[in-house]
Length: 330
Image 1 (tube, rainbow, N blue to C red):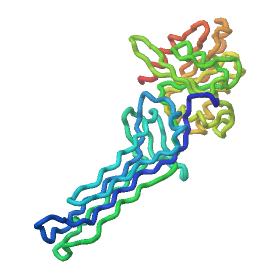
Image 2 (cartoon, rainbow, N blue to C red):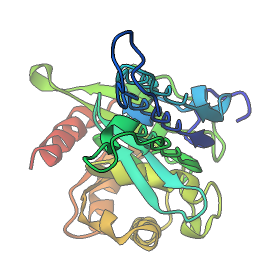
Image 3 (cartoon, rainbow, N blue to C red):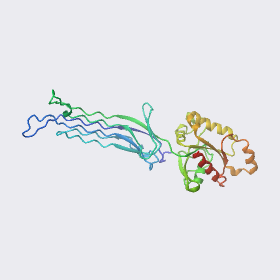
Image 4 (cartoon, rainbow, N blue to C red):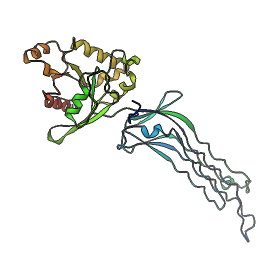
């Protein structure tokens, strides 16, 4: 995991710029007696802004740049010259990034669209120059407004993978193998639990040149909502998916029980996940003959669209794609 380029959790410290001070300047010009106040306003401090970028898929660029500081606005000067506004700091993040306050844990906002901006910290406003304060009874104010102070704080940025279909199942259920068959993705595949340690995305081609995005999510075990296994670290990636494809191998002792355990883990993590479309795929069916498949269909969960597939032989893979496409467009 240490050598992986996929980073979906990072903590940063950011500080926006202070506003520039207004100027307490008086007009000094030949042949102009009592020129009066002409101090300009201060410039605005730089803000810290998150911007969604569809070309980014990880937060690794922020792993090595944990401190982000914006510049201060410049002070005003004579002849009502305003100070220069500081440049805003634009931090590009992948779509699906959620920003939280590191101290309170409250969600500041989230970025889900390309080009969408979220202001983390607003720069301080520039102070007003003394010419704003002149009145009939105070024609020579010798004071100006100081600039507003910027803000600072620590933030946690979490990436929740954006995908149309999420693969949900126990470790070694055949999720990575299916993704490698239906898309050009090349996830690591091996015969041991937790081969997949990070989400993998693949684009699945359908009929009539249509396509959708499928996410292979690390395996879930009983007690994952409490942090067991890879725990809640990757359960959050399921929240963004439109359709959940539950995958249970054909050699499972009790398919209904395994499905209930998986569904229970998702429910205890976030009850809103029950509102998503759900499908069930029985994997590794190349081990079964037609008679066993017929017998097994009688013991499957009721009211749930189910298909028996084999990624090795290609059994019912096209049917699975069609079912997923229909579920996405209900």
